[in-house]
Length: 91
Length: 417
Image (cartoon, rainbow over all chains, first blue to last red; front, side, top):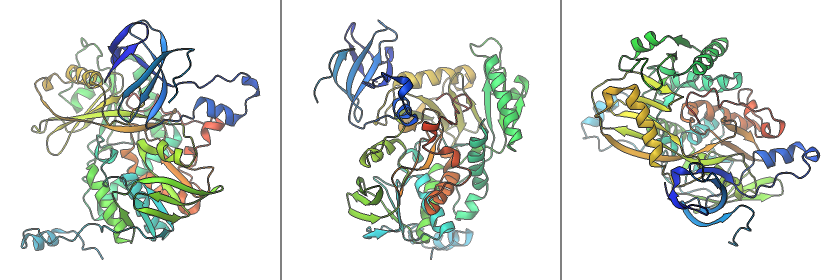
């Protein structure tokens, strides 16, 4: 349990938010061209990093907007928060 | 040779104030090379080593464990054992384990306190009723004991449940698997460790894997905090940390690691002599032999390796527990903890070869791996020894995420994942 600084609403309790998993997984540009291996990679395979990970979060019980977060999964420390479409901060 | 545990050894050791018991397993330094190394000294890893030695004559093997054996999810789960899964593949896998549980204490000469006290799953809405009836039929077709109970029968089987129609999620019925139950989690790890050690397996604790050495597409060995260990076969049984090991080998797995919490109350006199699980409200409860209520909560929805969960998860579970069991309203909780569970998209495990020769993964057990410990070890040992899966774990390969042949137990598992 931790506090999350929503880029639209400010600091709120984590239970207002929904985690959306790994960020920057790009939707295939040509889905019809994809092999089964590439589909598996896109749909299922995850880095699941112990350490600094880029994630999507949604302020589900607030403004309902999506944003990105850089978080250390080994201690739940939030390193950075940035809006959708913005470039991820260099690590 | 290990001394056999019996009433006579107990009496004999009583005369020396229990100070001269033989060590249950050695504390060896790693050899330079093994025929196989198991990464992860939890129940599943130790069982794998035990069956590799016992059934496949692989005695020159080691188990390496980052911390102490049984200190991860083996020591953190709520010890529930059942096999009432919906799909044929799962039923085969989990019932194989349940059958081994039934003779495990005798086989290991170690009391794992397996108690077939029954597991009851409750239905709280019409869809639950349909799902549980369907699951009961599927179980019986697979030779697994299961019965559907009416609300009155639920009340009769476990009288402290509040079956009033006025509660927020009334009990509309339930299923019962009488062969299901609980076991002592630590004893399972210790029993398998003792058994494996007696057959020459090296159990190396405080030994963290730092890297996996590959020669092209084959495994050559592992880098550890106790030096390099050469081996051609590495079986990874690292639960929540499976992805960490996979990343070392340049593999990606379809897993997300999340905190799962459990808690126990202060000990009280026997009040609940079975295990009751409730999917819709996410509450499950049993009572340990010490008298503590053992309560399982849910997972958080974000990836974390902190072994800590959120307060609202515990609060949600306790709300449901109190509505179903008003008698517990003044119980005090004694301890709460978290473990990191590796969850697959289809909520089924992976017991599989990988694209790297000699590298095997046993992971993805998610929120319910304890029940499968003996079966998982047996089948994973078969997979490693023969470089081919057993027919019971063939469906649980990594390739199912490519082929689409998933074993989707999300709707069928007895608690929400």
